[in-house]
Length: 145
Image 1 (cartoon, helix red, strand yellow):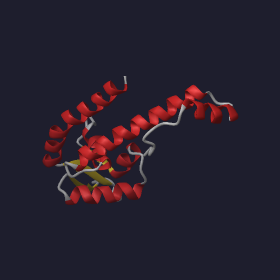
Image 2: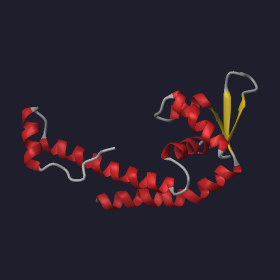
Image 3: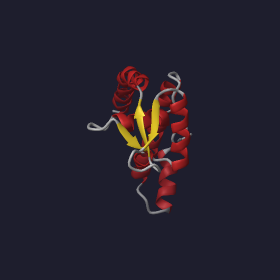
Image 4: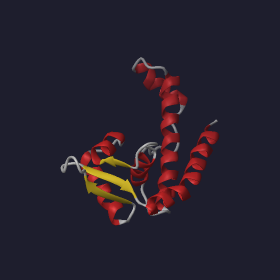
């Protein structure tokens, strides 16, 4: 998260940037981007929280759902698609299983591998959430123009 409510003045940034041979405009652009991204993340976290989810749990479901020709992924594949460590994926999997959003079972060919599948409850949740999720994303982009 980016915790500055207001960005530093151009004069202040110019002083720091000049001392470090970096373009002040580039730094201001980066700080503005970080501020906007933080605001969007906070808005999304609030949205997901109101539906009993976190952004990570939502993304966990989406990475399985977005596969056009498959209805399940291995835990390793999910880990590869998310920017979190394996133990975090394992904890998230346990929570989503307990909440009835996913099921997992050992792979028939490799007992060390778990296959994870969305439940009908997860599909229904995504169908309800995706329109508002995309509306939030679109709104944030429109606000930044």
